[in-house]
Each structure stands twice: as structure tokens, then as C-alpha cells.
Image 1 (cartoon, rainbow, N blue to C red):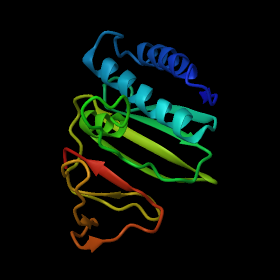
Image 2 (spheres, helix red, strand yellow):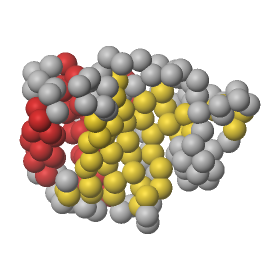
Image 3 (spheres, helix red, strand yellow):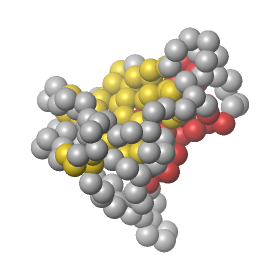
Image 4 (cartoon, one colour):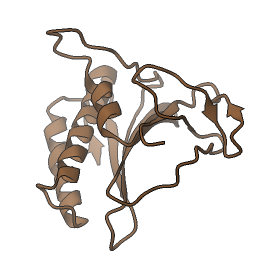
Amino acid sequence: MEVGPDPAEVGRARRWARSRLVGSGIGDDEPLAETLILLISELVTNAVVHTGCPAVLRMLFGSAGAVGTVRVEVADASGCPPRPRHAEGEDTNGRGLELVDGLADRWGWQPEGAGKQIWCEVDGGIPLPTPATVVSAGPVVVQAAPFGVHRTATGATGAPVAPAKGSGIAQSRNA
């Protein structure tokens, strides 16, 4: 779904996502749906507010017949990486990526064209393999860590790896 660079577009993105969820067999009032809608709202808001650029929202569903992993992707034309912030007290913003980090099973970002893609995944009850893996020229998956704390990423062999410059680091709370 194409999203214009206007905060009013966030509501339209939520409505589109709800219809996609219902069409995939995930009930509108299920906790999984509510979590995904909140994640979509945060990622789309970040894209349109912090970049001022149009964005593209995508939802990818696991295999048919079972509620597997749902992946949300928001791509925008800004090449600037996301900057997690920590809101203090009565601050009215700065909590978006903290919410994503707390609600998603995994999240990260990677370059896409001249811009970037921020993605998150929520597991719908099907366990995923636990070893961390590195996809060539893609994001690096790291062991779970408190928000803002970085740990050494490991490849499929368990050897430490460093992400390529600009590749983004995928966070995982269930590794």
C-alpha cells in the first residue's frame, strides 16, 4: 500500500491492514491483530513524520492454513537510518521504536533502493529456529538484548560477524 507523506495517512494504513488481517483469517479483535496494528501505526507514523516522504507498507503472511509469522515492512525514500530514542517523563514522542522493540519478535532495517526498509515480525504461534543466521548482503540477526544495548552478532557457524555498513541490525527478543 502506498502511503502519502501526511500523518492522516496512518489511519488509512491501519484500516488497510485490518482488512488484510481479516482476509488472512486473523480476527480483528485477536491479540495478534491488535499487536500488528499498533506496530504498523508506529512504523508508518515514523516514516511519514520523520522523513516527510511517501512510504510503502507491505504485510507478508506465513503459510496458508496456519497462523505463522507475519512480517510488516515499511519502505521510504530516506536513506537516513532509524534513530531509536528514549522518551523521558512527559515527552510526547520518542517511544515508537521502543514499542516496536517490545512488541515485535524481531525487527530491523536495511537499505532499499535509495532509501530504506524498516521491518518487524510477529510470530503467531509457530516456533522458529533459534540459531542466529546471516543472510548475504542482508541484515544481521543478534541475540536479544535490552533496547539500545548491542551484542555481538554471530553467523550460522556461531562465529562473530560484523554487519556491512548500512545494513542495519535485526533485533530479536526470542533468540
